[in-house]
Image 1 (cartoon, protein in one colour):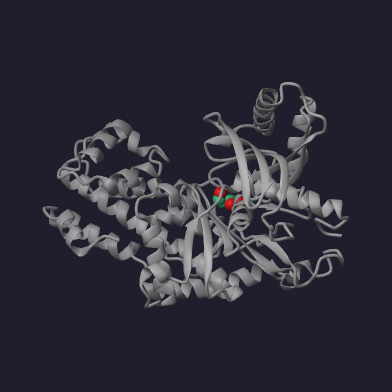
Image 2 (image 1 turned 135 degrees about the horizontal axis):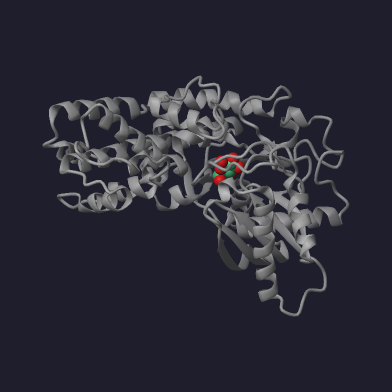
Length: 477
Ligand code: BGC
């Protein structure tokens, strides 16, 4: 959090008209405990709706992970994760006793991958996998390597080895993939290159995080990603998923577990309760998929820097800042990634020199001291709002499932790297649940996740192999 003294010191010396604007932003971007509670309440209803036959904004996708890992799963697996900037390829050895080893390589995605063709995307993945397999298995393999494919986009699954992309998120906009099953697309690209790999499971990054963390810590109740995008997964009672009634096979027990990839970045797409500002609306309208991922667009890393940029442009247009500066570069969408607010927040030098240098380098703008202070204050406000809103999904899942205590396993660049995110998120949970205990005794805590897209994908592949070996189902009838 930002103490009153620090805030007062930061705002000292700012001209009255700009200060007034800053006060407006403070009002606009501050989310009270009461508001968090009412958002959480609506969130619970929406989680339920997503599981119902009619469905709702939140997809609540059954992930066909039907077992809680025991920690005793073993074997050799490959895993891949198509992230925002890298393709990560991992060789995983599950050792049992909740232990595993991984060896990984990251392949940088081409700059323009978000708008590449489908052919370019699958070729890139298959070529990277070929390099990895050729290097690690120079003498070839006896049987195809089982691969867990972490695909971190909303993909419907009628079975674990299927993923029909509902829509791209996080600024991706590749033609010819939406509405299609991505597993055969990857499998075909592998076959064309004679790569001995069998895609046995398609996994969302949150589901992988959930399972990897549960393998190591049985108190794990959910897997969360706070990164370029945001989302959560948890285990639901199979019998509490009305939209699956009659669809799953008889060998699936009603009281058994089913991992649900919530895809709750889509929460409140109908704009019922989130406190959107005109900047959130603008980001949404200018995105490749307007009216989708409303919650994600307010809290995820892909958007935080962009929010700051839009606010600065607005103040410039009002004639309050950047007088006599060339703002050509500042007009470029997504010029700022999350490192801009992150670096601004940690700049504690008297004259905020790091902010000055960063803006000069990125936008060729020379901020005066008032403007640097403004950037720092806006960064705090945008990031505090994001971290507080981020926990509504956690609180909603806990309340829906009746969890009084929980380890909520989180991963992602914002969770791992954004200064203060963890503390602010913990405070958000305290405000929602009104705990009066010492913060170190909070009953529901966000903890650091195990490697979901490496170990998690491998464990899911292992669970799937085990079920198939026993003749059990891994999808709808
Ligand atoms: C995607 C989710 C993913 C999340 C975090 C969202 O944009 O729709 O599938 O889990 O980002 O990576």
